[in-house]
Image (cartoon, rainbow, N blue to C red; front, top):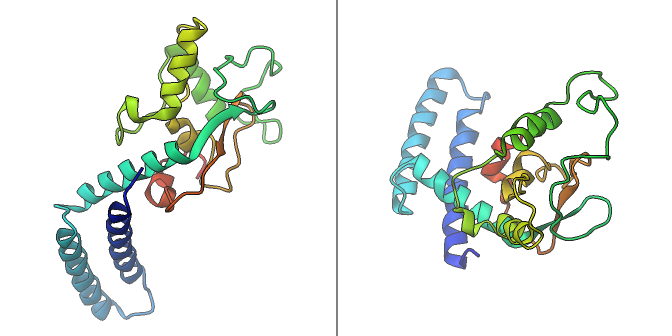
Length: 205
C-alpha cells in the first residue's frame, strides 16, 4: 500500500506531465509561439520531476507503474465470472464454449484476446506481465499459486494482476472478458487512479 507521501509525489509528477501534454497538444497557439511554449514547458517538466527526486521521465513512469500495480492488487481480487467464487483456477475453457469460440460471433473475425490466451497462456504457460512489481508482491498470483498447490493443479495457467490490465478491461468501467472463467472484482476504493499510466498497456483500451 502506498503511503500518503508516495501518493502526493505520484500526483505531483502526473500533474507536471499532464501540464506538458496540454501545452504540446494545444493547437490554438500559432506555431512559432507554440514551439517556444512547448520548449519552456519541457524545461518545467524536467525541473519539476528532478525536484520530486526523479532522474528522468522513464524513472517517474517506473515509479507510477509500481505504485499503480500495488494499488490494483490491494483493491481487487479474482472471482469466478459466473458463480462469484473467489480465486478460481483457469479451466482451459473446457466445456464452456462451442467449437469456433475464437471467432467473434458478430464480426466473424478472430477474437484477438481469446486467440492470444489460447496460443500463449494455455499452450505455453506464458502470461502477460509487466515488470513493475515482483511475483511475490502480486497478491492475485500469490493466491493462485497457493490454491494450485493445494489442489495439485500443476501446469495450468495462473492468473495475475496483469490479466486485469491486459484482458479484463478494468480501465473501461470494469467490464470483464466474460469468456474467461475469472474476472477482477473491486473490494476496496482506490486512493488514486491506477490506470493513468497502466491503461496504455491494456489490450482493450
